[in-house]
Length: 123
Image (cartoon, rainbow, N blue to C red):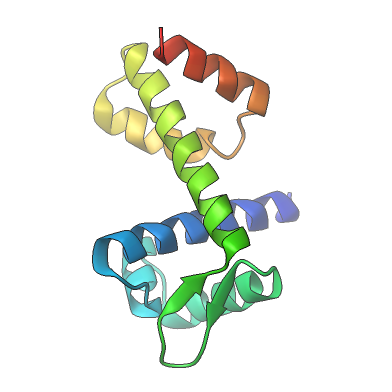
C-alpha cells in the first residue's frame, strides 16, 4: 500500500512539474507547495525522492527540472488523466466530478482498461 502511494505521489509531482514548466517556464518548490496545499519541507522531501528515482534534477534555490525519464512519465500521466477524464464525461459525469474522480482513478486503471476507455471516446 505504501509503495502504491509513493508511486501515485511521484506521478502527481512529475505531472505538476511538467504543467508548471509549460505554464510558467519553470517549476519551483513554492509553486508545488501552493498547488498541492502542502508545506515547502513536504515538497522538498518529495523532490529528494524523485531525484533518487532519476525523475527530476534540482539544486537549492533553483527551479526543478524533469529528466528525460521524468518527462516521459509526466506525459504518460497527463495523457492517462485526459483519457479517464474524457471517458467520464462521455458517460455523463458532471465535469467537476469527472475532474476530481479522474485524479483518483487514473492511478489505478490498467493499461487494458485505459485502451478500452480511449477506444470508447474516439468512436
